[in-house]
Image (cartoon, rainbow, N blue to C red):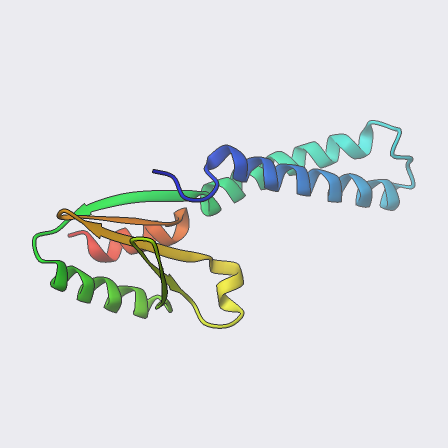
Length: 138
């Protein structure tokens, strides 16, 4: 199950945004028209870099974790996520939604946790999941 944009959607978002911004800026700085190919070459080059970096860190990732004691895992998750600045805010369907307070939430996104039948499913941005896995898994 995928919640949020995967690699290609995230890549496309960063690639198109950066390509357009760099092409316009390059045309202004170099004094070129947008009908010439040079601003787009710079834009596409930097767009590819931004797309790859953005997709690597900000795509949505899901990982599952088996547990025997739901209460112990909930306590561990709450402590670990709290140390990372996240706190439980709401519930959507079977998911507990963790997020950072105030403006920090805009740039970090949310963490979705579902516990069912001995398996915890955790979904968030790739960079957050990487840090969370390092702290939770032995």
